[in-house]
Image 1 (cartoon, rainbow, N blue to C red):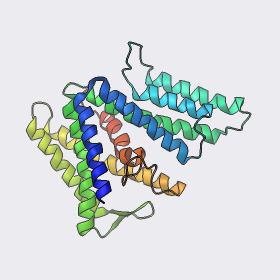
Image 2 (image 1 turned 135 degrees about the vertical axis):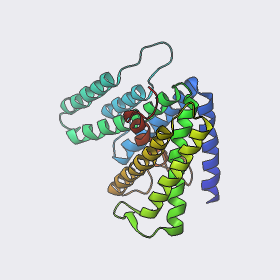
Image 3 (image 1 turned 90 degrees about the vertical axis):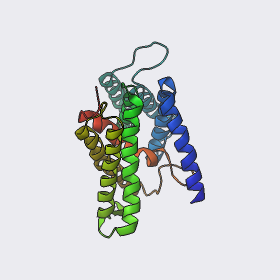
Image 4 (image 1 turned 135 degrees about the horizontal axis):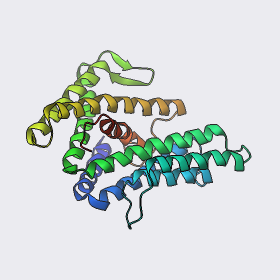
Length: 263
């Protein structure tokens, strides 16, 4: 528990630091984290790290997760990057003479898109006007939901939310996490009512709690399918990148799709 607390505090301070620094620091940091996440995904599925279809997935994650690349070269559009990855992965089934199966290509495509797009929208959020505010609003609502669900669930949780996938989650915990997330959203509204409207702040909070819980359950279901407890061991006591970012990867694209953050 002490190791978990120490590693969590250190990781949290580093992460908040790069959010505040912004510019290329935040983008570069998230790109590295995205590549580590894809490495975990490939390993979970038993793919060798240096096979060329896996390398194509790494390249796609790199391109997708950096909406504004450095050094002045133009970014590849989401549509262009997605099509290139699709083309390369489908071609791999041909050139490998079906040693690389269509199921393999499909999994790698899914992983690259899921991870790359999720981290891309984190960068997009930070690049908005008042980007630190919108980034912290979304993250704090996610974290409030997680913490609220944990502590409320432990205190009064009785009814299991989805025992076949995540036996420790409870309905009471999920409701508690949602309420605390809304409270955090309201705090941000009262801090800067000229930047965010009341219903907008509540919408971000509700979306963060609901989509974040689903993102957590998705990762739990996948790890259960693969028979592992954690996706990796990068952070002592916390697991891997995907264990820590499962909610983020769903919430950030979701709040943009819903139009809850500025364009």
